[in-house]
Image (cartoon, rainbow, N blue to C red; front, side, top):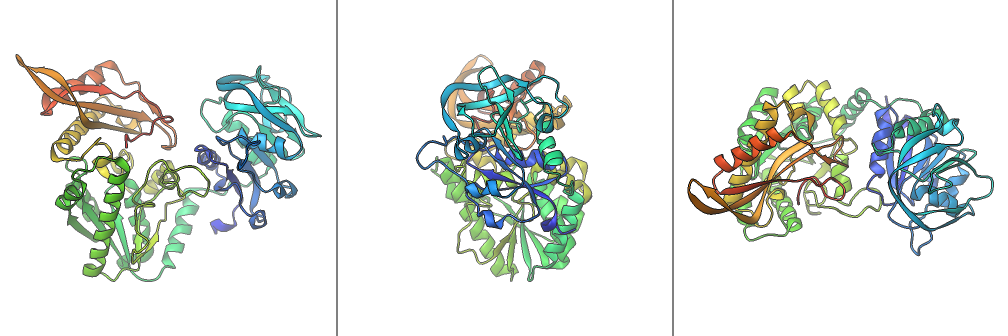
Length: 508
């Protein structure tokens, strides 16, 4: 199947970090969704597009320079759904009025005034998630109210094929948000459920077969880069070589595991030990963004040296995913950069190879499905994500050997205790963080001044949002006791209880 020809839903991104979450929710029920900038050329929308969703935004529609889509989208005669800011854009553009109103954040009871179409099979009321300070004051001509809350008289509106909702159906806090999206996509847009990983694998392998020349694939041992290597191996065989760079910032014992993994799957692996070079480059650097960029540049230098020694290579393959692209500020929408990612924001424009990223439109859960299809071992599939810059983003301040040692050992203890408690597979990521803060401890009968280690354990579906894991106290106690007893130089252990947003998963 040609994935370019399947039914799709377009999400116009007005700057919301949840815009991609809308895409992911739609893909969960088998319809392809992709993100585009709010000001995309309406003429480029073809017959495969069965509906358009307008995302939220931190902006206000009545402000100067507010992101506004081409009004011609209303002339396409295909269903539209505006969410929060998208809802306000519909009201504002079609002749109504939006104004600053009483803030409404968090859970709200939604009263259904019309349980057909968008709210098909809803009974009276449900819980939705609000996040807005603007609201419709006057509706455009012809629109009817189909749901309301105690604070929003027009929490959901409709006219013909145009729908607007003030709340966010894409977040899990809206109890039947998936049903609302499903009603819009399947019943109103009548999009066919043609998106699945079987089709993706078939299509991607066929596409990869069409690239000419040799490919160098950067691997870390993580699921993303390994799946990328497996897809390329299926497509081009001996024209592929994989490169594993040990930057000294890996998990404990990880370098041996990676070598063993690739030996087991029969893919040629070039191993380069560059620990000393990375540590030298990072010496004295405390700014997290600068650390990321330095690591990206050093990776690029090694890639170029590898080309000279083992090449020629025309392509550099990487396991870049959708969240990598979003948070690096190079997504198709106007969302601001959260952090640089060396896959997508740290490579120099002078790189001699062209970049191929077979997974850049997939989310982590989709990659795991592909991994299973390609025969990857279960323990590899379930392994927690690990950042490309490695422990450098889990070490606050300067990266040095002492902090690396503490971070590695403490993180290993966190993982071991979660495995013992049968909790490892229930969380998204679990690791230790170390910085420059110190506190007084008592070792035997003596006081000593040691580092503070922070433990971070989060639950998530896609890394776009995450909540801190409510681990049992006995598990936290074991983790804390082991770290303070077994990791030299640590006096205190703390537990991070910040969710994403406003925090990120990784501390830097």
